[in-house]
Image 1 (cartoon, rainbow, N blue to C red):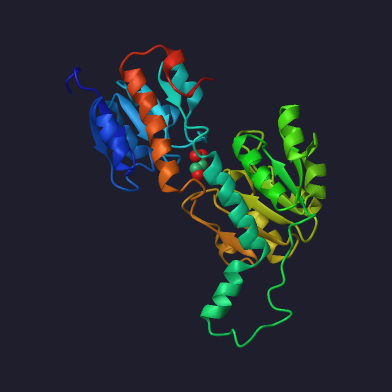
Image 2: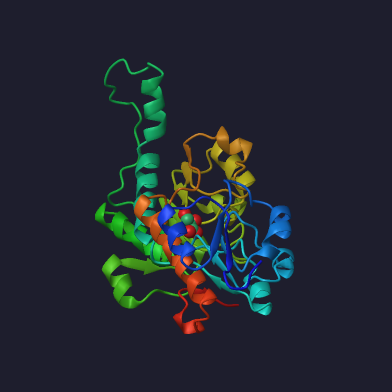
Length: 327
Ligand code: DGY
């Protein structure tokens, strides 16, 4: 491949505006849907490329990076980057970037939407109507949880956690949260939010528990059998972070046994697989990882990742490259 025009691999179809922008910088290959969800294909193809614009479903492992001899930058089309071995990349001098900020509002809206849909049983009620069972207004049909005065516990009070808290406050909910450290006191005050150092105590006190933390060694299976037992029996669980923050098999059992009141899950431990017992669990809303899926946000995510790639390929200094991650 010629050295004059860098080669850029995009591992899934993305908004055309982003592809056009990247084409000003190099030769762009956009893969077909699902082409790079395993190491094998990456091991084979990545050595040809100077830059990678990848998805949260692209496993950018140490093995893959070691073989990618021409690679200068990995830009993730996501804010979460647990799919990338950042340490290995940094050791090899390969830069890594993600896309914070631009998806905050879309994800905040979506979390609120999940909570409303789950607490008011939208899915079951709509299915009932479609099944032709709606034969008249029922005073005892589909009674759900009213949000005003209930407590929302948020684990992970970053931008998205705060966006959700802001919306939930507007619905009259009380906000409590757990985070590595308390947020800026001004922001805490604006949200009227209370910090809990102990996430178990937070779970005990939450009518709704929302997971908005990154997936790390510390948060892997943070929601386990013990935590589910601590939660109130009526409590609802919402996850738009990463699937493996929950022990999915244990959650599926807890939902079947009515240990908690329900769950809305946008993310799964082994996407795109969904635990079979979750598929049959009561009061469970299962969505295909679409928290950031608005036209505006997905284009903004792509542009941010593309800007990082362009900056690196143009040889800009690190402080001019957006959202570099180092380990
Ligand atoms: C991300 O960007 O990490 C989100 O999972 C997208 O929904």
